[in-house]
Image 1 (cartoon, rainbow, N blue to C red):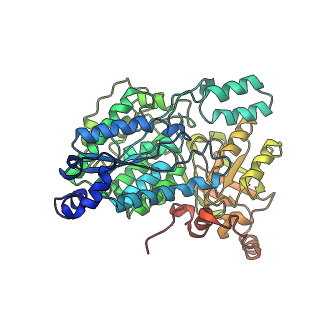
Image 2: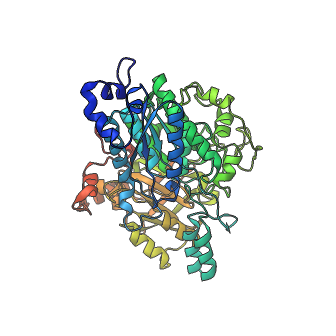
Image 3: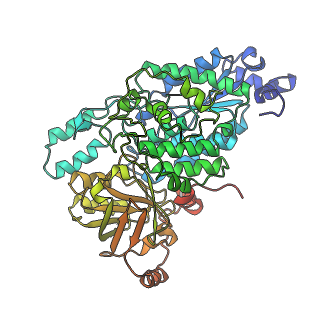
Length: 564
């Protein structure tokens, strides 16, 4: 924004000398009043797609946002942003995490090149929400995010409403003759009954919740279901707020601060959020040039932040139940003595003022959200692990792990790719007591840090969730359960110790105390590492080769660094 009281758009569009810009915009129907009457110019970064159910309703939501912008006296300019759905990108998962950087870069390009005073970010899903938040932090314009809302749950399955992951579990059950082909088909057809982000606490809904916890959305915006009319009312209000942010000169990094990022960490721990949140918050802190170390924050607050919400995979509740129980406002309200309640939010008010002014419309439900004096667990829902197998970091999710296997010792079964591991699991080559080791799937090795959700879902469907474990330098879906550790850093492709694990090695996992150890002597590990040879990059051309060369490690957010 300009240093004086004028708008970026006013400086670029007013005056005879800028008629060349105005005439082009008039070719799309913009009027003199739209362009020259000191109306805030609001860019709508819209990741609408018919390839992503979580973004399918953004066409309708965008129209409501525009209505709000116009109502508040602004002018709306809409542009498209790419987006990938992890569930659909089976042909090449490798692009999914790297797409986050493209999303961030593309919004930077549009925001910096065009006369925009503020941004409305339309995103719901895994890499798209963090990519847009990263862009907001980088360009530091007034910005607000609205998500499309979670989908409703599907037919009953294994004691819960089914969701997008149920079919992967059902595949294991079909292979194990626990269900027949007709039952499998019913799960396929009826688990995703509406559009919206997946109905569990996966990465998509986790990041929407954390955006709200940081103050980057309207209060209660994260969890209103996609098909509810309230979602449209929120969209219109979001457009109005975008104009207010410009007039109040509240920029993205007035909201995304050390204190608000700390709030996001605490809320993530309290709701049992996705392990991927560690990766994305680390990347966001980098873009915001914040002083907070996200890994240290998770490690510091996990023991003092209780788990007070249970949504699948931590429990059997879906996101609609979480919303009705009070959603993120209830979580923040219950945690407020531990939160930074004085932080600025996109409403122009503090978090405390937002929560004080919020009216709960449904009764409390302690089966879903509990007070801090009666938590589901005394500690948080994510854990940072370290040890000779993860010198920098490993990430796990205790709330998604049965207590009987939160401490696990087993023998290594090593696979140099996710595909090889999945093939072995489906061919019944994994036995009780095995630790499946999937390596060369980190940011550089994958490349792109592929999610391992199918491997764990198949183990669960085969009845091995409580007798096996899985560790990887890749990452997991937010819906995974079973004993698992991901984000192991340094990754295998950089010569981390995971690169020299051998079949039959004993591995010790202690999620409770944050330990991940290869029970092999230091001398043996050093000898193996000395003989290790760096493999050739899997990808020889294109964006993935660029990402292979430039991506940082998982403990640094797997970002392409651009500050020197």
